[in-house]
Amino acid sequence: MNRLSQRYTFFVIPDANQTVRKYTISKLIIILLPILMLSALIGAAISFFLFARSTETIESLEGQLTSSKAHYEQLIADQELELADMQVELVTLLDQANTTENKLAEITELERQLKELIGMDSTKSNATISSFLATEGGQGGEEYPLSDEPETLVNTTSQQYTEISERLDVILPQLEETKAAVIKYKEILRITPTIWPTDSRRVTSLFGTRKDPFTRKATFHSGLDIGGNSGDPIYAAADGTVVRSERDRIYGHYITINHGRGLQTRYLHLRKRSVDVGDKVVKGQAIGELGNTGRSTGPHLHYEVLLHGTAINPEPYIKADREGF
Image 1 (cartoon, rainbow, N blue to C red):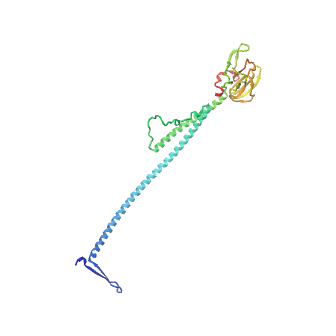
Image 2: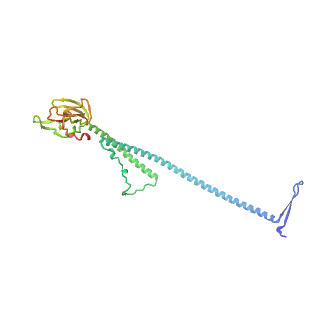
Image 3: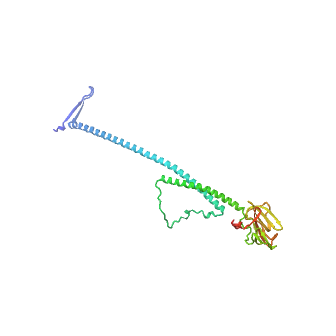
């Protein structure tokens, strides 16, 4: 009989009032049971060791993750601070750009006003270089790479805006002064007799000494004689106030206009007067008609310029036509 096939019987005797129990176990089971238990203990020990190692590894990884998380959180915080600083710099840059743009708008408006004051057509000179940019044709020039660093670009642009703004701060007062000077010049020009008082340009007698047409003797001629047709319009040579509008035996119908600063103009031998004493007239306004009244040999205008009551040569004053002053 195989020794492993042997069987052993165990009796379990409980309390006196309970039934005796009998268990039969083979020898093989008795041998295998300790081995299985030992294997289970070894497996449990290995499992515990592996679990402990895993726990240690997990804890190490968790520590590394925590450290990495803290590192990246710090990097993110630093980046957010840099972005915040960049936002402040960009807002400042935007303010500088807006300030510069406003100053440029002021300069553009001043330029327009100045051109308007001096009679230039501003629509002909407002084109920018970009408006002439073509899609075809040659191109060239040295290449300058843009900075890869936004901070460097912002700082450079900010510095450029600052320099432009400083230049504009200098230019703006100069333009204001120029505008004031032009306005003053225009005001003076308005009251200076610089235009022809007639449509005709036919001068029949100059200022100065001449042979009197009636006496044939040398006499002083105090103005310009401008020939024309009877009824031709006569124009005020400058802004002013009419101080004489009457008829005289020598002057015929005549008008005297005071322009201020000691200047007066006088218009003699008129056929008709269209303004009265006290009237305000503007440069180029029709004030009467050319005639042949008073001491005159034919239709013409005797035109005088007086400075502080003394007749002076009108010729140097006449610079432009009525339409071009």
